Image (tube, rainbow, N blue to C red; front, side, top):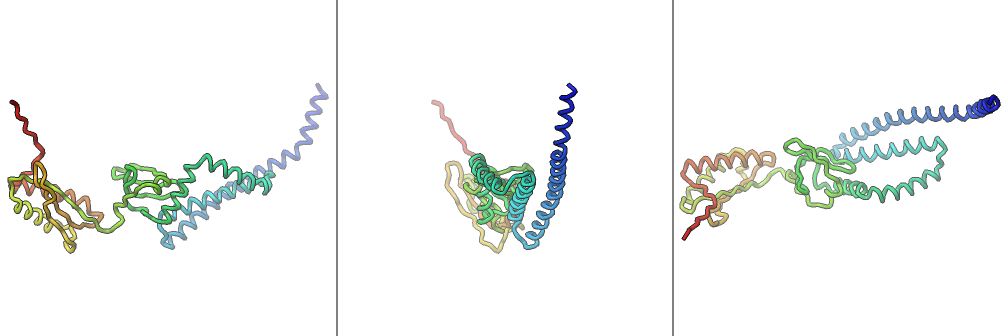
Length: 273
């Protein structure tokens, strides 16, 4: 037993230099990682400021910063791994085989990356635009390397994959500074068409949110089964679209009531024999 203990002690003493060297390398690598992490954050911050000063689109700034950050972290991790004996040839082999494996495992992620690149290249929308896509809608908050974040009107956050955005229909509601507003309302066949038209013309003239230098229209849209459908079209600033729409709808109802103009609803007469 005593001889066994002496052998273990001798073997431990033989291994101490190697263990000490490994521990020193480990400590140095941890320090390098912590310092590198701070340097990467500093580089990304400088890059963001430079792009913002160059007045680059906010979405492109976020996307570029994400790509650079991931690339720098990859270089940092590979550099640390090489300190533990990983050779350049092994790194190339690992990167190549890992790339294939990751590509097969993350086909959706690569599709999202390519989609994000296409979105920034063709710019169907920018940060701050209000878009509708795939049954979702909201204001674009940020465009990142894989996902685009929308903020809905009721303050929900919607994360949409860039791949699906790039391959689906996108309605950019706020792309233009002006929008054409259209309202349709039905009146009874017994009511005066001329009186109803005059009311709608007057509401357009009195509404301050309408761009009066642009053309507006009041027209008979349809002779429906239960009513005559009148329409009105006018131009408004995009950010005033809904406030003007809501005001005109309310005033139309009140003014028609005041003028004795009926807004009918579909009715069915049932005759029993």
